[in-house]
Image (cartoon, rainbow, N blue to C red; front, side, top):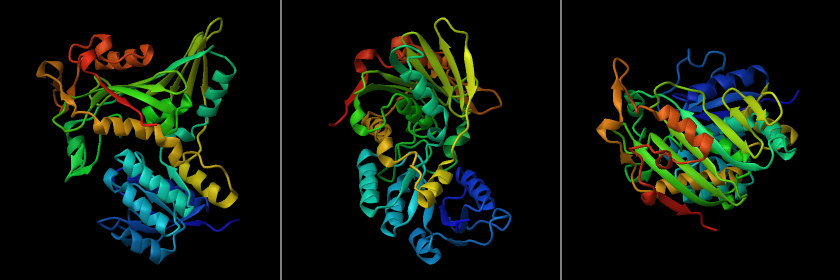
Length: 387
C-alpha cells in the first residue's frame, strides 16, 4: 500500500468543514494524512477528532514549508484564491482549489499559467464534474438518443436568509477594499449549475465562449446579484442559458436540461440523477456514482489517473465570471417585486421559481419571458469573448 499523501487544508471553517470531513474519510482509507491547517483561529481538539495533531498556522507558505505537504486544499475567501495557489505552486505543492478559481479572468490566467509553469497538478473544486453521469449523458447525446443537440438550460432556485449575506465580510460583495470578489448567485452559490451546463455541452475552454448576454438583479440589500440569468453563445453552435435565484419561494434541487431535437435529458447534479425523455420511449431514470475530486487528485499523483477538472477546463466558466465582473452593478428590484417571509427573515421574488424553470426550458432570459421587473431586452448587457 502506498504512503498516505501529506495534505494541508487552508480554510477549515464555513464550507471548509466539508473538506475536513472529506479528509477525515480519506485519511481512514489511508489515502491522505492531514499534516497542517491554515486558519486565523486554530481548530480545537474536538474539531480535529480522528485527524491527529496537524500543525496549525495562519501563514500558508510557512505551513507548507514546515510540513513538507505534497498537496493542499484551498477553501478560503474568493479574493485569496490566486495568491494562495501561487504560494503552493512556487513550492511544487499540488492543489485542490475551490470554485470559483478566481474573481477575474486576469487573475485566473495568472494562476493557471503559473501552475502550468511550475508543473504542479491543480484540480478546480467543481464537485459535480466528478459525477459519472456526465460521461453517460455525453454518450447518450453522441448516440443520438435525443436527436441533434439544440441547447442546454440550467435552473437553480435556492433560498437564503438575509443573515447569509452577513456571514463573512465578502458575502454578497462585488468588490471589497478595492479587490474583486464577484460573489453573485451565478459565480458562487450556484456556480455548479453554470459549470455543469457548460461541461455537458462541451463548452469548457475560454475560446469556446463567443458571446454572453446577462440580466443581473438583486432583491436583497447587497452589492452583487441574487436573481440572474445568462445566455452563452458557444463555438459549438448551441446556446447555454442558466437562470438562478437565492430568493425562491421554495428551495429546489438545481438541474441542467440537455435539449435535443427529439427529446431531452434532465440532470439533477447534486443527486447524480438523470431522467431521459425521448420520442417513442417511456421516461428512463438513472442514478450514478461520483468520483471525489480530492481522491482523484491523489490518484493522479500516485497512479497517473487523469485529472477531472483542470484549470483550462474551467476557462469557459471564468469567461462568464469576467462578463459579470465587467457588467454594470446589478439592478435592485423594485419593492413591489419582492416581499419578506414572516418569521424567516428572507426575501422572496414571487413567481421566480416558475421563471427559473421556464428559462431552462425555453433557453430564454427573464425579460423575454415577460418578467415585469426584468431589464428591457434592448438594455441587456452583451459581452463578446476575447479571441
